Length: 251
Image (cartoon, rainbow, N blue to C red; front, top):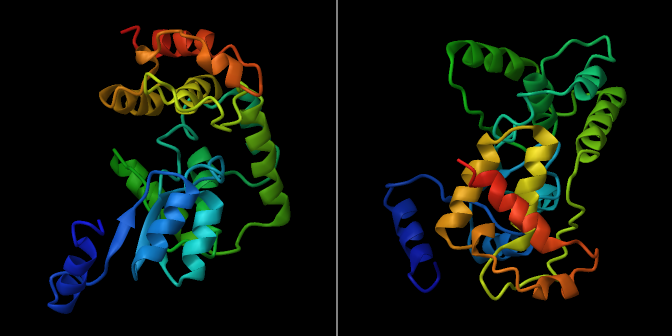
């Protein structure tokens, strides 16, 4: 952006009234997020955030960093592409139902994001009028710091229950990277975990298709074995990459 004088364009567009504010949507790691935030006088950023993804991409640290810079924050994926509302397993459901407060999984997820004082706007994909009505009703009660300590404890229990379903014990340390074939090993394994955790193929399949288009998916793995020696968790990476490929390319 710097090389293409994008910031100069943004300044001129704001000055002559073509746009009112300048912001960016983000899909990378926290350190990159900080670099972008510090590069320009942005008005806002858009990041992925929900009660399961507090350490994913910009995450909680990015949310707090942008607030420290007096930037607004728009939240995408508050329901994690529907993963937090579809195919809810009995153990997860029992945790939500353990309280006298009756809320749908969508309301629990949205209320968590709106509870954060650093959040200004929450985006939610809606495909039916009933969902629009429901989200409006939830928004009326989704205030900053409106959740009690007991309610916040439920989110921790639900998160632990989801994490107990993790299939591959990858910590995302990136010691296995770079792969000489260009495979994004941690992200591929993360997508495989998503299938096991959420029993939902929709969102991870879309992300896998994105990796495939960039030649970074498990299908590019030649099973050379170099990553095996680098993995600090002694994960049989080639085995799980093969499973990832079979899972997402079986159609």
